[in-house]
Image 1 (tube, rainbow, N blue to C red):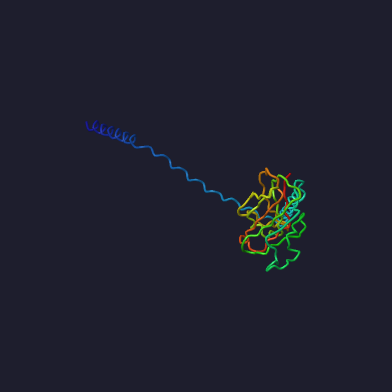
Image 2: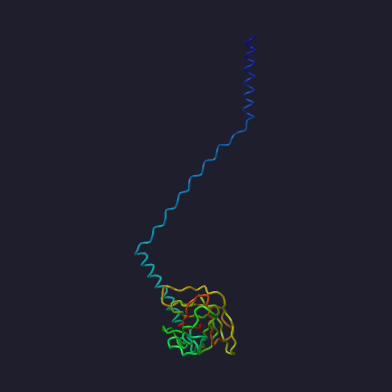
Length: 221
């Protein structure tokens, strides 16, 4: 009897243990930790030879751009020019010929107009053309970039003498250090009217210092 009782107790214990195991929830295995990111190797610094080649490529790109502008078959250069001020004209004085507006007439020749205000007011340069055209672009050549950031308006004059503003704002053109000249270029939809003149206005306090212009090219047909 004792043996049978002992066996019964053992069987009850085994059954309870099995039931307990079934009732316990399964535990999901822990997710593996992400592998640490591998830092990218720093880029190698250019060699002296590579830097020299990059400089020559920049000069070549500048020369190619300038040659395209200078020899544009649709471009023409100013035939007349006048300005609001000229360096040296204080108190009615006669300014030097090296600074007057007529130096802007014709193609780029390293002669230029220089204004007489470094940081106050506005100045303007007005140029006229021999052949009125339906215009699409104006290009202003600025020696050394002197004043290129101060240009704030471009106007076109039709054959009736009316002025039409085609751009006004803050210049986004910076000095082009690849060459001796910086080209300020503004493109627009072809005008329905014939253009005979261009007026460039400069806000002197935007870029301090004297402003200079070598030539102004009008593009159209």
